[in-house]
Length: 239
Image (cartoon, rainbow, N blue to C red; front, side):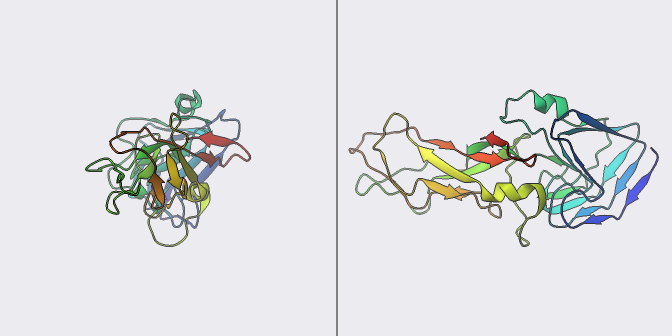
């Protein structure tokens, strides 16, 4: 209460605080505190990283001008430890923030104010057109390859800052393997159907994937699947 946390630095997560509870039942409250100019150098949560702990910033607490340039959440990086995007743990653990406590000058590689670990997979945002395979050899056009992003609970694309190896809670994201499959067309896919998610670019790009089908036989519905190792131990999240 009424404390000033300014100009602190952490090499990994949480420039000021790192909170963790594998049961997702704990709570932590800040009242009239100041979180200013704090930095998570290689990790996430410029001011606070909270894993399985509900953070409350209330009664004129200020969280501003904090940075996580290689990770997520300039003010707070948090995660519910829910095994799916639809887990009720998300509503239980989501930060409780009074209006105006999180300022506009926090900055991060993704989620300048708030961010979470990935919750789902999405086709690359901003794509002008869907990838189309040639009927000649089944290959995709080099300028429009199938590629997917990982998305956090807020709908933000997860990516690193590109300034060296990421550290902390995002490390498991850098090891995600994404697999594509076509449930209704077992013999459709050829080539490499599993690719690594590249945190620096925020993409998994399927550059060696091709399709085998009769001319004009599409479109075909491709699915993408992956699992994320959660920071609570041996648990995994289905994306």
